[in-house]
Image 1: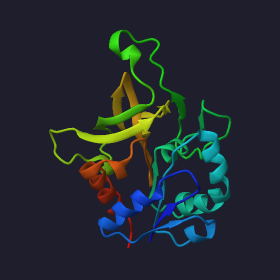
Image 2: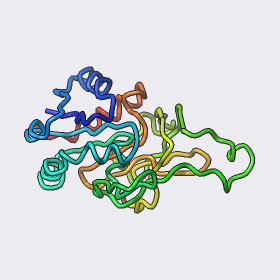
Image 3: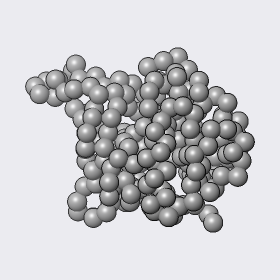
Image 4: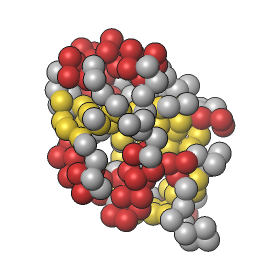
Amino acid sequence: MIKILDYGMGNCGSILNMLRHLGADATIVNDPENLINSKAIILPGVGSYDHGAKHLEPFREVLTQKVLHDQIPFLGICLGMQLLLERSEEGQSSGLGWIPGEVKRFDFSSLGGVDKRLAIPHMGWNEVEPLNQAELMWRMEPHSPDRFYFVHSYHAVRVPKENQMASCHYGYDFTCAVRNNNIYGVQFHPEKSHKFGKRLFQQFLGLIQC
């Protein structure tokens, strides 16, 4: 069963609805013990980095066992992706550190023209460019870019090239999806991204061992 982790930081219901629409066996859990028999885990999240790291603390031990040792598929979404990295300039707490990298706020001060006045947060639909042949980001159509829905003020930086799964452009190029073996993270919201998000979840379901 896929477990969607409710640690008080995300809208789990819309993710559950999409997974069930795809025929997946999924449920929302808010207790570490309920993660023990997971076949895959999804970590959503909205809000501040420190608040998320604090609320995630009771789950760290079982997450380490399931994700790093048992190597079940794991997907972090929005703040859930940022918490996969080591730290954020938004706060002082440490992330999970499963993928090298940090999180910083959009900064357009060095840009000129219209780009210098771009709104923060980055909100709305944007095109995403797959990197490193990652299976979660295979395009629906080979010559047509996939588009996903974003809502965020901070983004990943200093992620090694081999861990970059996709990029996006908003004022400048930034890493919008990351990967390390069985661990995946996306900055955008696939549960709000209609056919493109559905496709991503279908590809994630394909990673799960029955």
